[in-house]
Image 1 (cartoon, rainbow, N blue to C red):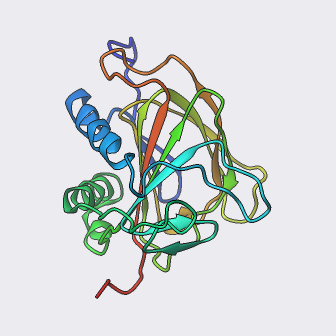
Image 2 (cartoon, rainbow, N blue to C red; image 1 turned 135 degrees about the vertical axis):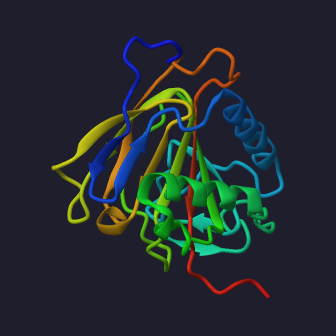
Length: 220
């Protein structure tokens, strides 16, 4: 929150996993939110994700660069309107590399050519179960940016969905990066705190912008 008595400190949550509070200032949050609103428009816009078992994810999603669906990637919104996925902008890749350099060091950032964005929208009732980001061919760090309402982010371990885990409060503007030994750690969002978004942002709910390196061959 603005003007908090004790500023939140950057924290190493697990080996290779760093929480950087307030990494995006208010103007950069608004610019990223404006971009997300454009990306959410059809075609290949915001959709409800359905799992192979017939269930639905409570967080809605839009993709850039590559379209993720359970549990693979495609160049079209195969589980949506079937149109080509929106392109991944170069400036978003630059943002991802800066995030990695700032949290894990410049050496890790040099190898990361980000080409996927998964943007999840959570209303007050949305959740995300414990899962691993394991459908990419690259082990480059995952970059996660939060906008809007605060959430409880549960960061676990690479072996099991169960404990040990650490619950981290992610607020608007926060950055969370995980790579190295934590790249395939289970993680999830058990709770969103409605009404906690910054008043000046103009967002009800939470947006999570997750950047990844696919490791897939470049499109021809």
